[in-house]
Length: 117
Ligand SMILES: [Zn+2]
Image (cartoon, rainbow, N blue to C red; front, side, top):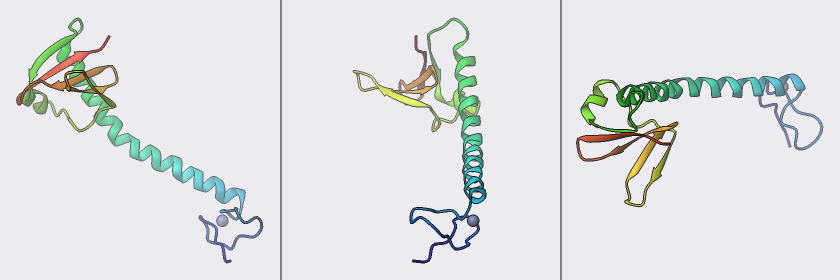
């Protein structure tokens, strides 16, 4: 069987499970993976940070929950698509989290923002 290095495409000699021709190519491969992961994360981490800042600003320092019109969040460029995890409560309401802050669709045009303690 003709095997080629994943990076430089030179033929591979040796063990059947080898996928790189050398340590150099193996390191190159991992460097490429790390770089791609970093690039992929930058954009989404930016949206998450922005969403978090908007929720924090909306809620203020001392409140644990607040209702706000959806369009006010949209005006601030809140991206509903981006969250870190979600939780469905016993009333079948979905809480979307950005770290320790969350929002829930209270009605068609209202969003409930909560701080989970
Ligand atoms: Zn190689």
